[in-house]
Length: 58
Image (spheres, rainbow, N blue to C red):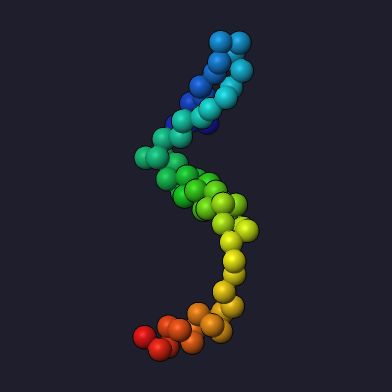
């Protein structure tokens, strides 16, 4: 796949990847969204009706 390069350690094992944002912007956006979801999965949730009510007050 063009626009993707791997960084390897001294034994030739792949341990990182470099993604061309110019070529794969959509792919990066999806990956970033997945990271944010994973990071926030244990955060306290606010019910939709509460958010809606607070927004309507403003």
